[in-house]
Image (cartoon, rainbow, N blue to C red):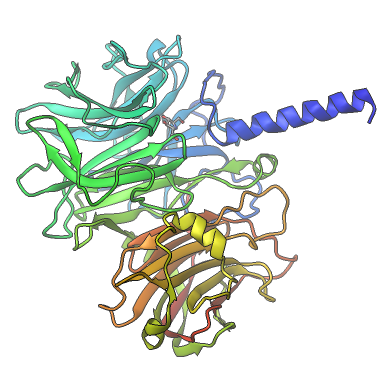
Length: 579
Ligand code: DQQ
């Protein structure tokens, strides 16, 4: 190769590599340059693989959900948004509202760089409703020295039902990175909670060396904040804690609690988004109010072998208490796994997963999640399959509906073969690796499973995303693995197609051999809920069907033992009105 061609080639590689870095959200240095504040969000760009009922913006880049809240009968969702390009940068808080969390209307950006305390970017944060029904936003601003500081903003006019304009008091920032706090790792304040001592508290994500830290602050008036002697929680070796979330749950009922609920016997959930793995982990534990500490239960390891809301592409999540329907709602961002080049071609990047109700499981060992009921209003034409056995190596096609935009609920019955399952190796501690190792096809030693669904499949089944279970026997209990395998989802170049997996902590014997699976399918996203929401996995896939051909849906079984579909219901989904 001539040297000039080599130079051109290296430059091209360099450009592509830097795009990749931006894309993975690793580089979050921010230089603010934006011309279009206040401009209405414009019509959709290219519709290739664009979702039909997931939250997204008409064009450009979106990431973290910010400050979700329910206020005077209206749901608000803010989100990290680049008004100019389909890559991360120029970050503002875009704003949409809804009455059902499924259909959304856009408003002008609520918060955008305008003052020294946020001139280099308005990063993630949350909303709190203060006494007198007054919302306040807490967010991270990037100041002229690129320090991360915490600011507040209030609605300009409380009688505007849409809370269109937000005002930032001149006394911002209200929290500075003082003492030995790392000013470039100090962000994402949580919804504040009100303690019985008359103080508000919030935590800000940070790191000290390699130790992930949730720094705790206290305030009487939401303006003057004092740092607590100890962090609320910290764990060595976990790196930067982004988007912490902290909320109470009740071990007695599935009823949700306001973030400030405080009484004996409550448990708390503490979640962090780990910058080094780009996955989230949560624990369930006790909030020791007197010593200002959160102590995770021994049951849930507090590091990257821990519990996850979602074992797939789901990050920077945030919950809020919906006092309209008395539930806690979880929002999470699902990044593209398409090539950056294609994001540019599409003109958009990033979606929010369907909001999920979240509550503590009856056994107290984990949380359970379920898509908000409102999504069912999009259910349209329905088909059903009852009591059908899928023999080893067989498939059953779900016919009669369009399945590119669908909701599927299936209950499998494996009671007849639970005594035949293969042996579990206790060395298999990483479910994601196990899913890649075993795959959806593997029949070597496979007795019960892999069985599940092929979604977004071509008619010949060659292209497909597999959503499946595989069951093993440990010494005295069954071990259930749930996986998403998108390796055959598309033949297009440059896609990131990781296999995802999680164990399902579920006693299949107690349910007489039955296990359920629900998948929300929407063009380029598949969100699956195993065992009624005990294990959840989200994947982004980009099926490249031949022109004019449609997506197909199959139930499959690649284990040796026959598996019965007790009941399968599938609905075509209507398009939601999204922004
Ligand atoms: N994204 C925001 C940060 C946050 C990160 C910047 C998580 O505030 O830590 O867009 O995705």
